[in-house]
Picture 1 (spheres, rainbow, N blue to C red):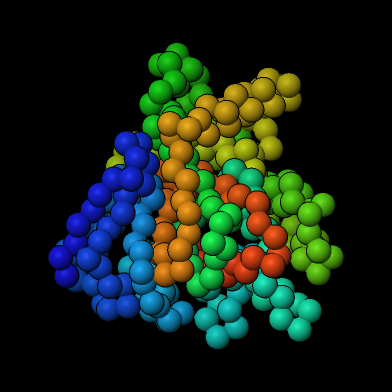
Picture 2 (cartoon, helix red, strand yellow):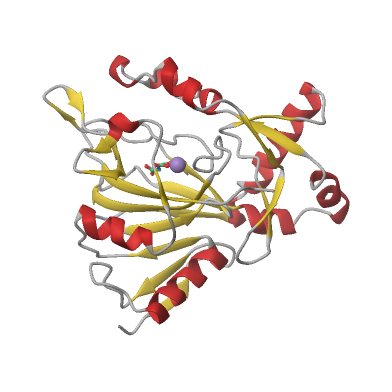
Amino acid sequence: MNVSVKPLTPHIAVEARGVDLSKALGDNVFKTLYDAFAKHSILLIRDQKLTPEQHVAFAERFGELDRHVLTENSLPEQPEIFVVSNIKEKGKFIGRAKAGWFWHSDFSYQEIPAQASIMHTLECPDVGGDTMFASAGAAFDALSPTLQRFLEKLTAIHDFQLGSSRVQNKLNKQQLIKKKHFDDRPPVSHPVVRIHPDTGRKTLFVDPGYTDYIEQLTREESDNMINYLARHVTQPEFVYRHHWEPGDVLCWDNRGAWHCAIGDYSDDDRRLMHRVTVKGTATS
Ligand code: OGA
Ligand code: MN
């Protein structure tokens, strides 16, 4: 395979061409893709036809896989695949609707958060249903050294239930998350600034979706700081907005980027995505 890699914005996202992910990739090809992913946080590969098995096999190249706590949204024959969809069959959603309709980093509410999330688009609206990705590394670099040093001393609590509550009032009754799932994911603490294990780059890890509060500050200070950092990280210059096309495979690095799915489409606009999640490492 003759792979080429081209940045999509100066701070975040690259597109790779000349790759067929349904085939086993040679080590050199995979290294080119992985290095681009770790450096630019988003790796896009278009026009892929993948079976669930091929999707999982590609994801396994990144590392050990992890499963979403909402196991009822996984594909029965391939439980590593988490189905994100607004499509109903026989009155039942075939996957998770309204997943990630707020800025977040996948599994930040777990002691071991996610490394990569790898999404394959099967169906998407012609217009709408885009996803935004923000560089938490470029945003950290742009802070003053004084604020950087201050933030590096802090830790924050992340909470699955808090993040989930942000869409609770938009969810159909069938999709409301059960108490047992919240009990399975108690709040956890992470450093506010983490170090990317591959690149050594420092990134802001206080995604406004799941972060509840910064432990060393008062509630008011913490709310204001998290709001400020959320505005800072999600400024247009740090953001890549992806318009999905069927066949897209997009790998995002949860250690370096936050993302937000845009809920601007209706349930008549069918959207069906398969996502596989790769397990990360402890944050400190
Ligand atoms: C997710 C998520 C984004 C999307 O599955 O983690 O945030 O665009 N989804 O569906
Ligand atoms: Mn997500």
